[in-house]
Length: 171
Image (cartoon, rainbow, N blue to C red; front, side):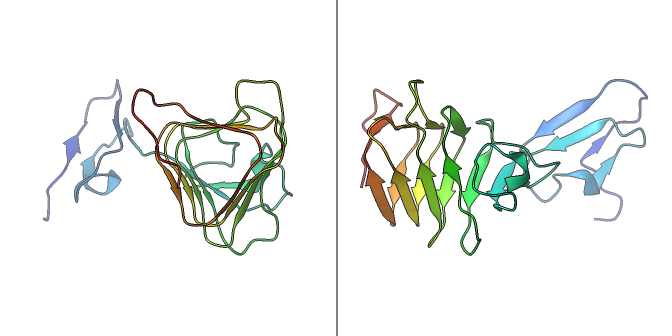
């Protein structure tokens, strides 16, 4: 309470970064940092808004939890929400996310069909509560986490569970 701080950084040089810190004292609120040398960062979540169309690779279609819009690089969790006008279409290969969540009544279309190693790589969990459509036999989805599906899935191409040697269940 009162004058409690989580960190005191009063020197004028050097910096400290806390990544994915948690707890009631995590964050800027309780720091003593008069020189702005302490950074608090968390995994960024990108939420699809489709405001510029359906192209996955257009930054203006994404709303980040912090910072300016950008296309997923593979380090971010991605959410495809319900109730928007334009749902994402991945039409070129090498799209990446950390965890991917497709909400109820939302859609994600994979139509890349490239000769790359993958068209969509999910380094975390693939959670589908809506609709995922893999359009062609040349589309490749790779996921490393869990496959959780309570929605609709159309698989026409290749699906690879990449976290061997553990077995993955696709339900």
